[in-house]
Length: 553
Image (tube, rainbow, N blue to C red; front, side, top):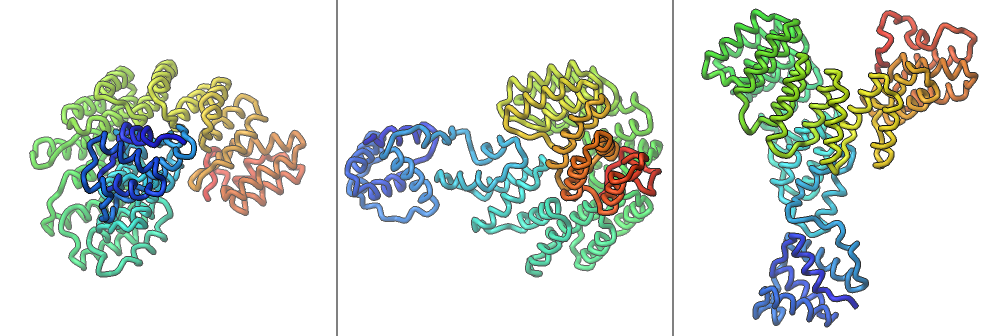
């Protein structure tokens, strides 16, 4: 029978905490197994844990939250008492591995958080509400909304009392993951007395994000009647909505209302106005506003303002002016924001056609310390935009050499670039090397990109197979490329493979990517001798649309 002492030593070497209460519980538990009981007591003595109370096993206090840790140690010891195996501790983590660290290392946004959280608890580790809140914040930051919602729901089920902020965040996540209707249901399930201004503000955000203008305006008016609007924060939500929907007259009217009500502008209010000028290419007004922000010390000008102005210049066709504002933005970037700011700078300099600046900022970014996948994603996308395939390949190789966590987004950037350059063989070799060997699956967008390039190169059998995989992996927001899908159908029909054509069409309809009327027209096309083409059948009477538009669900 194996000794349990090595198990305890291994447990502590891995950075796991063992306190006197846990050990006392273990000693009492092992009373009926004398060898283990003695070994634990001896280990406690050697480790200077043993006191008189422990020698007589007189600890009787309940463990509370630490009971899970004691149970976890007990499970490991019981496993080793039967047969000593490293498999029982292979999932152990070093001291630096917090729950946040473990979750942040999961590169695949499709992985469920629930098993990760449950395993953490089963290992006897403490779970703090503050850490769960930090995890949710970071997952939201990187747009991993489904995972953030899973953590939020698990936090509630674990009987952590949610704050009003937690509830407001949950409302936002439900809207992002399940849609506005489910968010409204959740909002009205909250007791009316608990619906404070923060939660009402979250619902207003949901309406604005979904561009539900009428509902947003109604709810905004309701919040004003409830005296829930005291600062620019809520006004900014509506201003941003008006800006995104092109309602510039309403935006100006709301700005006047803020002035009349004595609501002070903050930097977001000013940036929204600046962005409204940029998107409409009102360069003269944009420059006046930016000058005012630069001279008014209370305007709290930051790098976002210069990014907005640079985008405005790029849209209006002034790349040199855009470059000057981007260089100016670097002078006001705070040290704590350099990573995220540099990631945006990479893409903006690429849009301005400045390859030299992209490499300069990339080197600055790397000097900040550890380079995250988001940084590699930004620089690789920028080099693709600049048509610098050689540079992209070198940095991709660098990413592979330093990263142990696979990120399908980064691999997709490389393969999509190969497709657009007509390097089809390289693209498929990369799919095999990067995805198949790692057990991962390319997303629908990548499969469709491969299918499109196969059509261009006349590799129609591969085009059909890639399109089939795109349909199978497509998510709710994926849309099929009409031109590519039509080419696949025409190929199958011309080859006499009507069964295959009907199967892939049926699959597209079954997965919800093809409305009934379009499916009927395509089936009629397949069953007839008409050679007008599948694309015409898909477009029907709406032949003025762009051929590469997607089917709207």
